[in-house]
Image (cartoon, rainbow, N blue to C red):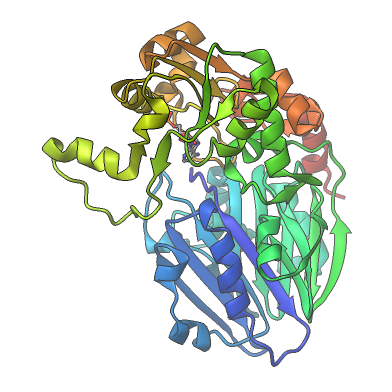
Length: 472
Ligand code: AMP
């Protein structure tokens, strides 16, 4: 099972002679935080499809010459997150599938939990697969449905077979199709451009192209964009289960999701954290970068002064050669350094979004103690992460999750913090402003909105099962 936490883009421009590749390229740059392992673009010029994909950052995969070769006014793009799964070009997207009537390109953000069974069925029926990717299973299924139905019904039939999270874009001839799973687990939004329409994982991509955010794609909705015009079909009506971790960590703070600016949500979370876990401290500082907005909220609500105490070097890339054991400290310092005068003799509140394995927090508590902190209070903008994510966030297995095996006091002891406070689930939900029943809280509660073997499933599944079983 691949755990794809990725970013997708789909754009169709009205004028068939216009070039879409550069717009997709810029939009992918704005989604780079959603995936750094691989990137790709597929375009169609009315006659043929062209694709370029590669391993690495968007800027490493594309240059002017490649963009110039990608002729066409319609296309899709993808950035892939480094995952625990296979890191190879075959798993880079868009994924292409050829069939009798042409070819289809697919790009997927999310994670399907029933692809093994689907793949076995397809293989038994004679299909041959070229990669280990779930997305290839989707593409094969879609091709089969297209031979039986018109476009909208083919997507409807496809979505009835898929279980899990997906915000998916297809390039089918000169048409972009975008579909969001019936629970709307992963984000997807619609943007209006001066000369067409787009869909994107996050609204920052729409901003980048100076477009206007129209709205989120609804859970269970299909969006068809052709020749720069848009058409929407709601395929199913369900209670949503939006990924709560997008609000906590994954989405960019300048994105708007479900009508909420993520920045405001995170400031709210920091405020709730300050109410729930006050601290005897004189300085609030973020653990950069993801703790910054939360720390602002904590500072505003508590009145404790805000001072940055840690500086992150954003330019230490993935290609950075790890020094040997004797230079370990150098490597750590290169990525993160302390601002000693802001720390020495001070009582600190350090704010981060989450503790997964505990590695980051342990290291940081030691660093600030070495820099002279009098006391260190750790505050976390999520409740303890107690269960793995099967639905699109590359997190860690249960064995690796520190809070899955230890009490909060136990984690505090491992961190060597003077105190540790996690925001409560109710407080977090209040800060987001979406009802609990409309969120996927699997990683925080161990209850998932879709059926996963060996795990608990909550009420949303009842509704989704009705949809999946409805073959009318
Ligand atoms: P850990 O060091 O394993 O406890 O991880 C916690 C740190 O990783 C926090 O600073 C988070 O901002 C960050 N983080 C949380 N979730 C993810 C994720 N899915 N991918 C990458 N980093 C993450």
